[in-house]
Image (tube, rainbow, N blue to C red; front, side):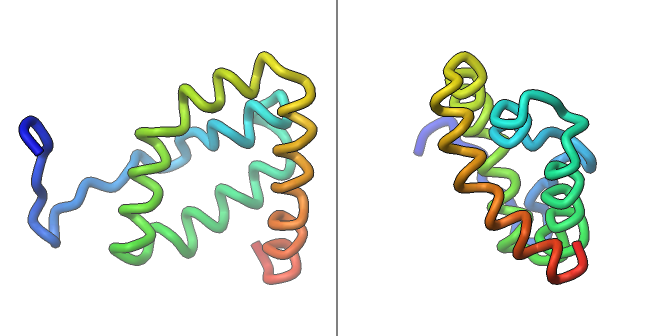
Length: 97
């Protein structure tokens, strides 16, 4: 664990608001895709309200950029990821996000 930052429970850094849905952006091909608005709303209104949610979002922002880079270059991966994300987006839309 050398070099890892340890945070007090109350001071786990939150990711900057409105920053990237890297994997979804790569899959849909644009940061302006309507599906991303739904995912961002869920992140902002639900996930960032709890410590566990903030930690998950923070971890996602750490690990997802290289994954998104690979997805952005492969049409087949984009389709697969969209097929995984679309039902989640539909579910969240049905819940008002």
